[in-house]
Structure formats: C-alpha cells, structure tokens
Image 1: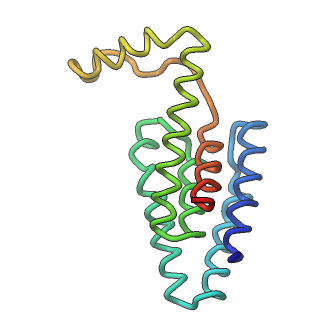
Image 2 (image 1 turned 90 degrees about the horizontal axis):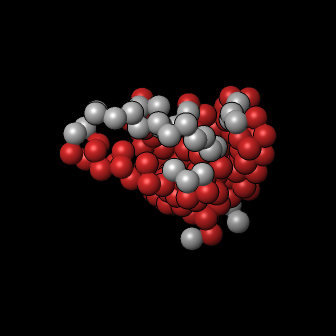
Image 3 (image 1 turned 180 degrees about the horizontal axis):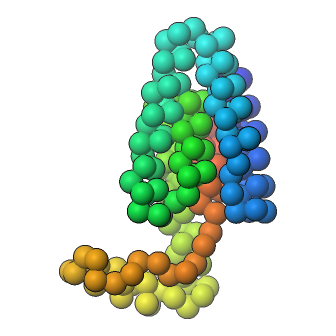
Length: 159
C-alpha cells in the first residue's frame, strides 16, 4: 500500500469526526495534509508525481468551485477534495468527487424524506427547471457534505 493511501484514510477519519462534531473542516487539518501528500508523492515518484498531485489538487478544487460560489458546499469541502486530489492525482479526485456526490445525493434524499420536505423540494426543482431563479433553493436543511467526500475518497481507494 502506498503511503498516500494511509494519508487519505487519516484525512477522511479526521474530516468525518470534525465535520460531524463541529460542522467545519479546519485548515489546521487540511494544510499539513496537503503538504504531506505532495511530500509523499515526491518521495515515492519524484517531480512527476508531485506534478500529478498538484494537478489532482487543481481538479479537486475546480470540481467544487461552482457549487462553492453558489453556496452549495463550504470552503472546507472544497479544500478537502483538493487535498484528496493531491493525494491520489487527478483521476482519483474525479472518482472521489463522483462517489461523494452520489453519497451526498442519497443523504439529501434521506433527509428530505425524513423531514417531510420531499414534495416541496420536488416542487422547487420543477419550478426551477421551467422558471430558473423564481424560487429560493434552500430547504433550511444542513448536512456535513465533507463526510460524503471523505467516504467517497475511501471508496475510491477501495474501488
């Protein structure tokens, strides 16, 4: 197992705990993890591996930039996906994003059903499809999306 696999697991565990407990992913976890990821990549594969890590970081940040600007995810979620991308490279960042998005969709659906907001949410989606910008998109529900991306990273390792 490569060293960056262990780093992904450690970052995922820390993120899950902190995001569930405090609803934030602090920079003191993510910045050292980013630097360690790039250092481990450099140690294992030299400059080409560091370059791949930087590309993974950019892909991870880029995938969540628009949702962040639309206030769909927090800044910690964006930085988390960037760090996970730096660990595994651009393709790993994409896999982590896709798996995290699927998990996030399932959690969202569960929360909407549990809080009896599924029907109003479907109405908002319907109106947004035909008249974009006509209704507010916020349901008032919150869940820590970083947990989904952290688990997506673990699943991407397993996959």
